Image (cartoon, rainbow, N blue to C red; front, side, top):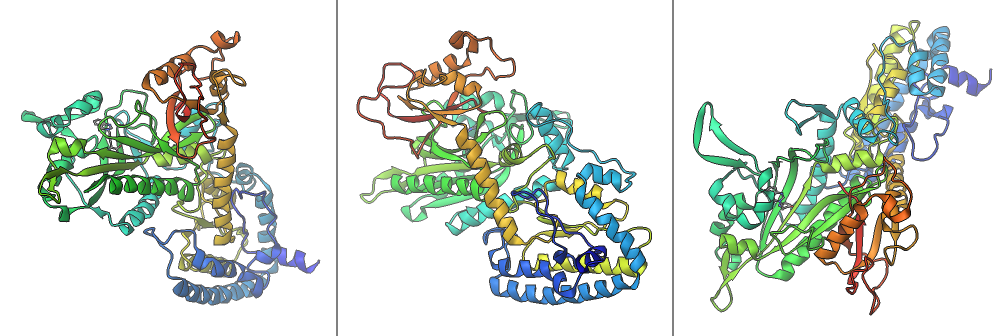
Length: 603
Ligand code: 87F
């Protein structure tokens, strides 16, 4: 027997990466802890240099320890891991026969697909995988991924869902990241009540009108009717601004920059979809007031930049930042900026988050005034901005695959799972203890380096079952590859999603260029085109692109292609080209083009 083969047969543990972004490499024998004491410390070594560059950003709640402390901790853990590995190696040598059996089980688990591995391991338990294919039946696939990864469960009120720890943990990561950024910038957190009096809501009558059907009301307490029905906040402008009018008296009270993390209720009538369209959702809403417009303008973009980072840096989802058209902006404000994401499997755009400049509209409605330099009363400039749990749905839609959830390492509640392998009925108690001890050491080492790691030591499940279980739940790394690999994985996920998005981003100069606007949408693209930005023209774009394909091409419409019309998603800040003098609107409305608009069928 060669040394390598001998070492292999003595493996007490098997190390594998889960769904690596680049093709899976065979696990080198050197990674096995029982092979040699030196090899056994490989995981700890991997962790050490990357500890300072741990994937969690300094701003998250679960921030990595300070680099020096992390290095020391990693050193200690490395020593401990070394000790445990030595012991494991010693114990493993004690019973060669048992070890041979244990070693034989590992390659089998390694080779087989998870489900097959579960069977090969003689699992009694049935592992439920994802049956629906993402491309064939996207809604069923989405629902299965969410429920089987234990992110979400259904509830008996339509449009409301239970966020299980696996999803809530992601939300907490997003919260920690964004909260760190805004607090660093000077925003303070607060909490306002969830109820709005009818009187306060009325003050915003003009633009609430359009939203009115979505407002939920409490009308009873027990069996008695309330004297006045009370609304449940759909957003908190009307809840917060009466207090702002009281608190803001002088320019010295400015800027006022508050944020709250809360739930809101919007009684949607369109088909609900977990995370993407729900009747209750979690969000943060920022509400700020400034003395001047330039200050407000700067903050709108600052916050939009943070939203972009949530999507691109945390969730590895590329977004297009831009300004909403007049038709699509928040009617109560001056202008709306947005980050727009793309869902390749449906070819649809989706609004990621919005940052509004409200101008002085609300200050006028709620009488929020300060005394100006020459003693005249001056209305403040306001912004509001929000990011919701829709983020999680977008992430699942973009990265999930036919095996289940795929989590970007930075938001995974659990980044590494350590699965002890190769334990058989013949494994002695001593060996089991050594394996358990080593497993715990590896977990401790990773944890000390700021990595969210956990052992799966359940003895009623085989490794194959566990591999499948964690794969479905999207744990980025099964074991042993350190944070460097995770950083690479994170970057690869963004690069892959960006490439896919860009391949479905078509620039045309007029309606019929190439396959034509509607056919490009039918082929699951977003389209950028020189546009006049007028609401009437936007209505025409929607109507024309909603028509059956047959009218434009003479071909029968594909049943599966969505027939909804396209809307403008935004006017991207980053324009594909300059609009030359004399350039006309792509739609043929006869107006001059002002900017390239981004259009798509959207959620
Ligand atoms: C639904 C019912 C009542 C959206 C609504 O985007 C009112 C509204 O005002 C409503 N749906 N909106 C606009 C919300 C604007 C703004 N609020 C703060 C945000 C971000 C956070």
